[in-house]
Each structure stands twice: as structure tokens, then as C-alpha cells.
Image (tube, rainbow, N blue to C red; front, top):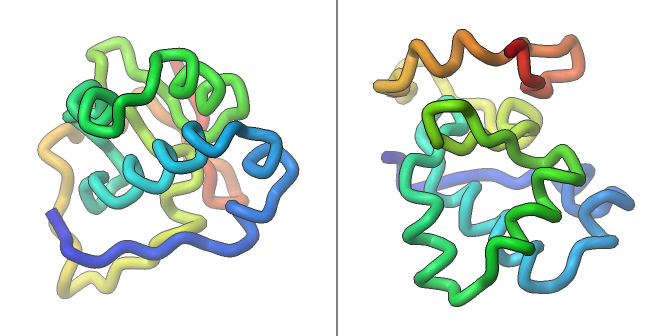
Length: 115
């Protein structure tokens, strides 16, 4: 996993983000920090426990369209490619390539469910 991540100001100043509770906002930032180079978080349940936030905070991120839970249980940051542009020489492909095929990339750089 990389040691540096970016967050686009357009994402965290959006109405969808600003309407979230402080705990949900904090959770989103931690999920972004722990994502692999394709925006997948495999230890999101541990992050919830570590931050002592409730499932309802994650549910609010899902409802806002900021994260997607895949059938396998992995979490994907919807705006990952909006936030992060990783140079090809530093990019490490996700080990979860099959799960990424369950997503559709929109022209605006957002992942949406294709399942």
C-alpha cells in the first residue's frame, strides 16, 4: 500500500460530503488513506473498530454514493480516480482485479456498480 494519498477539494466540499456527520467524514478520510492503488479497501471493518464508529456512519457513506460495498465484502472508494492520479511507474495493481470488473468507470472518473 502506498504511503501517500490525495483528496480532491471538490469531493470534500460537495454537499453530499458536507451533510455527513463528522464521524462519517472522518471514516471516509481514513478509508481513502487505507485504499490500494485502485481504491479498494479490504480491512474496512477493522478501520470502523479502530475509529470506534458505527455501521450507520458507513451506511451514510454508501447512501451518499461515496463508497460501494462489493458482493465479496470489499469496499471501493467511488471517487478514487477523482482524488488520486498515480504515476504508472509507482502504480501497484490491486490484487482484487476480479472485483474491479464488477464496477463501471464513468466519464467523470467515478466508479459505479455494474452488478
